[in-house]
Image 1 (cartoon, helix red, strand yellow):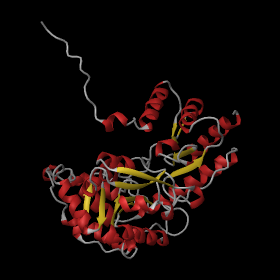
Image 2: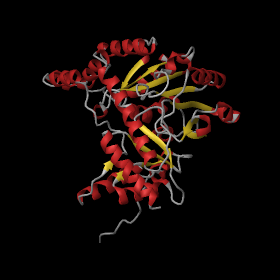
Image 3: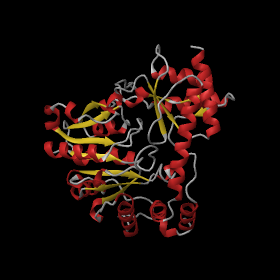
Image 4: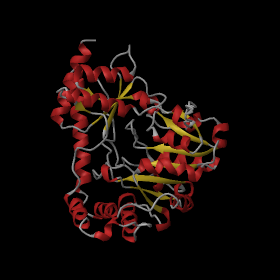
Length: 395
């Protein structure tokens, strides 16, 4: 006689407590409306609509013809290390040793795994909020506890180190910092980074700085590097990415640089689950970092123009918004109350076909805020602003 086995399958506490990323929910909604013929203006995901540089695409195209470039790489090739060293020296005047460099399948992958090298279960990680979700989810995957410190508009969205309780700082192993910030678009100066280094040294905390948007600063001085501050390499590392600066999001090329001990521990850990990036990725990275930098300048100018057009058009259509100072995103407080940011985004999509991201998806403090990606032409951004203005008028 066949007995039915009805015991429920066990799902981990982490997976059970996790929710689907709101971007997936919004994308499913967008796809359904598009299938019905709706004209959707997608300002959600930060995927550049701009092409990579011609010389990068040509280098990858030629490399793809060589069968040897489809094998495991196992270690970062010397030309890549030279390219990263040269780029950091030229761009930030920062000297990086070869032992202080590791390539990654994108910064998100790096944040997924780095905490396994720095934290034991139960250790504390300090993360600013609102913030990019992987900054908090990465530590949780390693069994660490996350202390969220608020990033407030009255403080220009900078971490207030004095507001972090001493008992938390004494227990913390890592602090995560991201400037220019996604989603907030905030920037930090050398004075802030100096305070960060002092805080890290006082409490013996490792700093992980995400610097993916340093090339997309619209107002004020050009973006810099946390590692340019004296003492920074004693306490931390920095992630940098080719995704947005060079329009290479699909190739997933990033690297972590800085403190050799941290990078060494990360390298050793990753040898147990990784065989290195594709040689095609390395060739793209080398070509991007060592070739003409016109694409970076063009990207920055393009996103600055789009920000000005979008913010100006929104203000013209009845929603007075601030100009986000950096990144390829804008970060605005909601134009009215009475619904959550998620409800606003879904209703806006239904009524206007404009798709943005609710601030609540970026954690505590994000509710009542909205993120728009500047990934459409100025003409489409003006159209989006007009639709949003008509939507607001009917409230």
